[in-house]
Amino acid sequence: MIRIRRLAPLLALASLAACSSEHKPPLFCPKVAVLSEASHLIRPASAANDVAARTLDARITGVAGSCRTKGRRRAELSFRIGFAATQGPASTSPRADLTYFIALIQGDTIIDKKLYPVSFDFKGGTEQAVATTTPIRIVVPNAPRSARQQVLVGFQLSRAELNSVQP
Image (cartoon, one colour):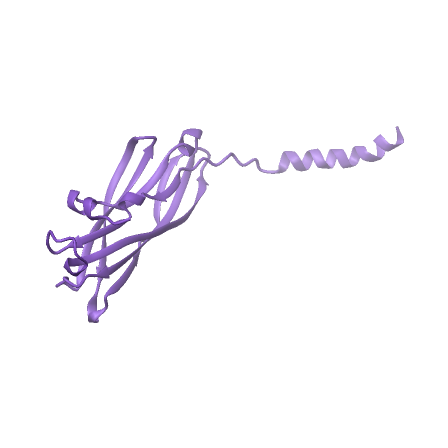
């Protein structure tokens, strides 16, 4: 009985501390990934599938970011996308403009998809260029269904560009 009396104040303090700590809701965020089939783009100057006929060879180098709660019922993804491009031997332009997409999917269903531009400057005779997006923010419900979704990024490829992609 003496032991319980000595522990009672400690138990009371522990229970008060537990009540005063802020309960954080679980965080349900979609995963962000690069779609491998749309991560590499080769633009040829002609129908020849020859390295000498290429005007551009571009890649998505990766995505990096984080997810946090935004209020009680929403989660916010914040990420950047990195790109790299090499000007091909057949290029005649000091600039290359491409289109990439960001798609929110669940299983095989596209929930939302948006297209964005990315540009590469090859001024001064440089053959390589890189680009990084400004932070991209996507707000989703902070609900278990969001954890079953995925955000995919990739180049918006034409049929010919899709066929020319090398593994």
